[in-house]
Image 1 (cartoon, rainbow, N blue to C red):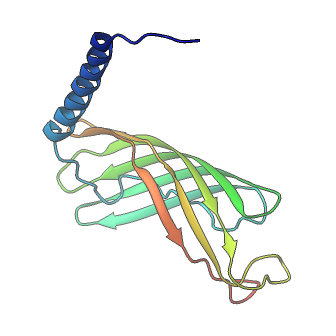
Image 2: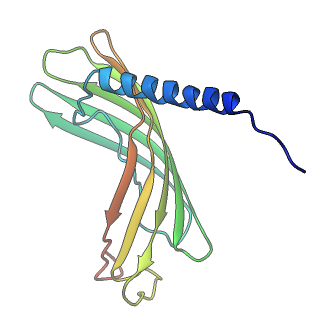
Length: 169
């Protein structure tokens, strides 16, 4: 079937896009500068071993001048039957204390997709001696305290080169 397009309708639609892009750029250019601080985000990847699905509990403690951080994590990793694709989901509790600031407590959740492509032969246990592992995902984080509170949605993009020269390493 044939339809007629009204030129006035098309120009109104284009003006909506122009306004939307202008509003987005104005918000981005006017936004305050974000400062990434050590210890305010959990580890995104829990394991580079894509041979089998797994569950991991982890604790990390870090020290810095006048403070430190504590992270407690629960990660569930699901592997494809080929052992090449791995989906990792994490739930994290964070405690962060910087010099002369109140302690901040928060939570984070992560979703990472990892691909592990063997570059060399596999050992008897199925682990490749050397592989390349690109990964991507997001780890939204919320930290709350009296002096500082923030919500961030950091995108994670990385490339790892896992090596296992011996079956027990």
